[in-house]
Image 1: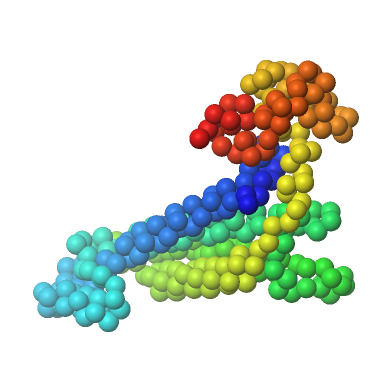
Image 2 (image 1 turned 180 degrees about the vertical axis):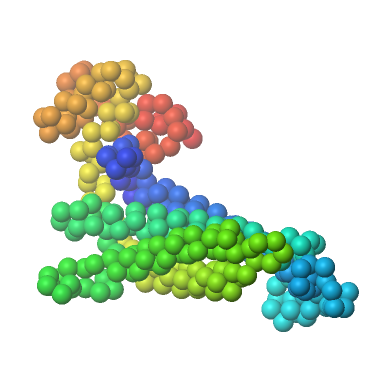
Length: 292
C-alpha cells in the first residue's frame, strides 16, 4: 500500500508526496550516477602510450602503442585505445580532470540521498521519525538505547574525501604541466583510484547495511491530515487567497484544514474528495482528481 507523507521544500512542510516518489528521485540520481561513471571510464580509455618524450614517438616502434593497448584490453576487459593526439595526451591531464569531476558529482548525489535518509530517520521522538534505519550500532557511549546513523555518516565522510580529492586532481591538471609533459600524473592517478575505491566500498556498504533494512514508520501518514499545506488543494475550489487564509488560521489555532474548510461551507463529500492525500500526489486540479 502506498505510504503518503508530507513533502518538504526549503525544509518546511509542503504538499503530500508518496514515500515511493521520494525514493524514485533517489533512484534517478543513481541512474545518472551510473551514466556518469560510464562517461568517466570512456574519458580514461584513451591512453598516452607511444608519444615517448614529447609526443613525437621518437625511438619507439610505430605500432608499439596499438599493440600494447590491444594486449591491455585483452587482459583487463576494457576497450583501451591509443590517443589520437599524443601532444595533448602527454601535456595535459584533461581526461582525468573530467573523469574525476564525474566522480565528484556521484559523491554529491550520494551525499544528498544520505542526508535525506539521516533526517527522515532522526528521532524517534523529537525528530522527523518517518523512517527506522537499521540498528547497526545501537547505544552511544553515554546514552543507552540511542541509535546513531553510523552507516549514513560513513558514506558522507567518504563523499567529503572524494569532493576534496577533486580539487587535488584539478590542481594536478592545472599546475602539473609546462609545455610537453604533465609531471603530476602519479598524484592525480593515485587520488582518482582512492576516490573510486571510496565510492565503491562506501556505496556498497550503504546499500547493504542501511538501505536494505529501512522501514517506514506511521509518523509520515499521521502528519499529513494535520498538515497546513493541505490548503493547497482548496485553491481551485475556494481560490488562492481564501486557501491561504485558511492555512494561516490553522497554523495559529492548531485546528485542521478540514475543520476550517467545513466552516466555509464545503460539504463532507467535497472535503473527502479534495483533501484526500492520495489525489494530491499526481498532476491535476482539485487535488489531482483529473489525473488518470
